[in-house]
Image (cartoon, rainbow, N blue to C red; front, side, top):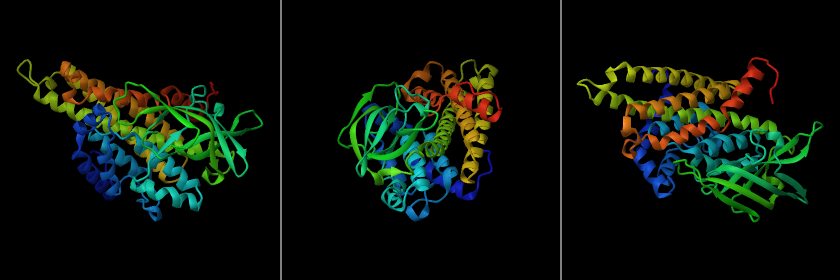
Length: 383
């Protein structure tokens, strides 16, 4: 790795690489093909203490922030084992509860999230709201000492593995008619909650779901933060999501680049390695440049978040740059392999849809461009 990395982070990276390398992409691909979960890898990471390196030490975490958790995600992905629940469970849900939860809520959730014994999903996206959080229509209505939730969520990852999920709801409107949002921890087996599998082309162990809430009851102690203050909390939780998406992209790009360069050095067609030809070497070199630039921005986003500095700009740019770089690297790695790039035994093509997804989610490249135009450049809001 060309970056100067602190010793503590380097040790985390080496340890995670050692664990993940013992499983590798063949393990990951076999689990996906069989429709099974990657529990063995998840449990190994949890027992070693690496699933909660960002969470407070008093709750069993490492107290090291997003820089450390991003490093964990990056190393898992570099081994060909990207875990989407790592993006959601400790990064989004864990960070939100650590920052905004009550003492009882922290006691209830953070220890399990840090050890990996608890898995949580995050439910924000809706069929008719898209990226417009103000249009969220899933409603939590006060009912006695608790709330009743009604509405629909879509493309929610990993619900089948999670015991609970952080659900973003509307609990009123502001003076401009925009939704006042509130967040609740809802059990995935709660009465009145139904889910429908969404069939996608993703080659990943975590499934995508549409969720239907029909008078789902939650007690007031399941609300995270004050009622109506959820939008601020959500946006604080989305920066870690963007950072983790960027880290996953960088790790997968490193994985693909290593395979591409090895193949380009070993494969000989005209009496010399194909990597000697500029038609092969230059596209890989350009992709490498873009990858390293994305790596630097991701580290900046981590540093700003961990320092308590508003990290929206850096997090969005990092996610944008890393997704674009990962798509270019993986596509060029497949191209370098020629027809072999489509063969499952080379472990490349099955990962393409994951990096392609990360161009669109958790925030689309178009919404990142809107953010930069408005907040970084001071241009008029376009939406």
